[in-house]
Length: 208
Ligand SMILES: C[S@@+](CC[C@H](N)C(=O)[O-])C[C@H]1O[C@@H](n2cnc3c(N)ncnc32)[C@H](O)[C@@H]1O
Image: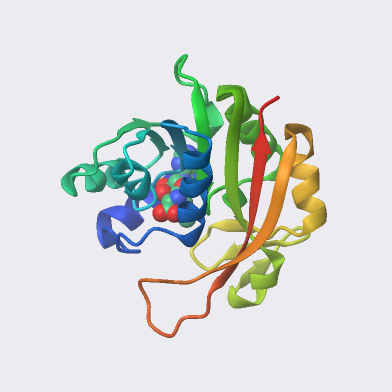
């Protein structure tokens, strides 16, 4: 998986342009309402979803497996610290965060891996901190071509395996982390014209 992402960013650069997802803007508002100023973005890519938080004055740390993506963020003057490493190896240090925002990344991992990532992200939160994850929904499974693997999992033609969530699996994955909100969102594909939106779940959990 690491090679896939490295090659993608090395060859295609900022392929989704610098438009933030609508989910990032929703998370920003919620984090601002909670007076947060320090957040972690796991799977931050080249920072398109870090930008609205940075512009709003947040201290943003990212975790990203692709060196090329991290370099792209620097080249585009996005001012945030990124740890080059895998989400499966969190924690990397003793930092704590008020918020975690993770977009379109958790569904790239197996059930066991998702469990590990969620547990480790939750542990990085300060008390009353929030984690906000977006995960692709089963409602969008028809938009993807590939080989059907386990239930709700497809191996795409590029070799990447994607897990499509439904409400039951969301509750299963996040149930241990004090879910405070689950909502559906149709994310517009802002860098492409006339593209159907992608359906996601937005899940918010609060550290007790
Ligand atoms: C679908 S992209 C989403 C990127 C970013 N969240 C965004 O919305 O622009 C998934 C991201 O997760 C990163 N990634 C994949 N596997 C990873 C891993 N094991 N550890 C850290 N990052 C990973 C990829 O390099 C890529 O940047």
